[in-house]
Image 1 (cartoon, rainbow, N blue to C red):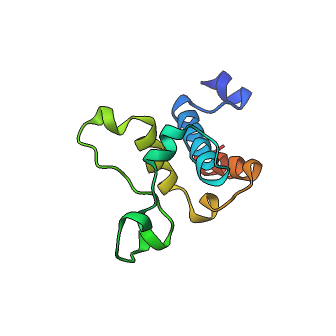
Image 2 (cartoon, helix red, strand yellow):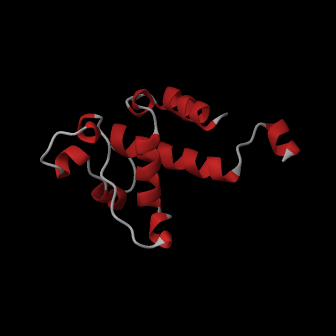
Length: 108
């Protein structure tokens, strides 16, 4: 771990979270990314008829998962991490500044 820190590398868990956030950013802001993932993602405002804090904040709908193995799949894990991001970070449409902000929120 000392060598990893000296090189400035992220821990494996943080790297996975970073990649998930970048994937969600590309799907939402640049319309890139796999079509299958795009089909699984929807905003809470599109699903709910009521106006709540989550619908007005632009959060994504989280699918209900019964099994831990389902919770660890890319679509579920990515949506959960995206919703945990600060509103200012989620709204950033520029890729470079978004990546820098996500690294900062992860502690790097």
